[in-house]
Amino acid sequence: MRVEPGPGQESVWDYPRPPVVVADDRRVRVWFADRLVADTRRARRVLETSQAPAWYLPPDDVDLGLLRPGSARPTWCEWKGSATYFDVVVDERIAHAAAWCYRSPTSGFTEIADHLAFYAARVDRCEVAGVDVTPNDGDFYGGWITPDVVGPFKGAAGTRGW
Image (cartoon, rainbow, N blue to C red; front, side):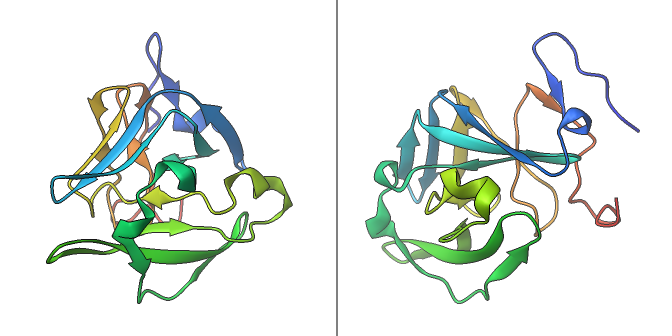
C-alpha cells in the first residue's frame, strides 16, 4: 500500500499522529477567477499520517477582501479544534467553502491561528515553489499533493476509515 519515497520525497506514512505544524518558506500562491488570492513564503504545513499536507497561509498574505464568511457549518478536528469556512468571491464567481481557518486552535496548533487553508479543488490553481498542486481526492481533506510527497493519500472513496 505505501509508496516508497524517492530522493527528495517524503511519505505521508512517515508523518506523525498526532500531527505537527512545520514552517515552510517555499513560495505558495493561490488563484481564483484570474486573481491572485494568496502569495506567501511564510506558510505552515500540517503533517498527519496518511494525509497530504494542509498548507496554512498567514492572513497578511491573503487578499481578505476576496473572502466572505461561508455558509458551511463549522467542522471539528480532534487535533486542531473548530474550523470556520469562507467562500472566495471574485466578481460573479464564487468558490463555496474554498478556505478555512482555526480561530482558536488547540494548544499544539496555536501557530496556525487565523491562517487560511484552501481546498485546491475549489479554486482555480494552487502552486508551491512554481509547481502546480494536485488536489487531494474527496471533499473532506484539503491536503495539497506535490511531487515531493508520496502516498497513498487518505481522502478518496473508501479511505476515511484508514
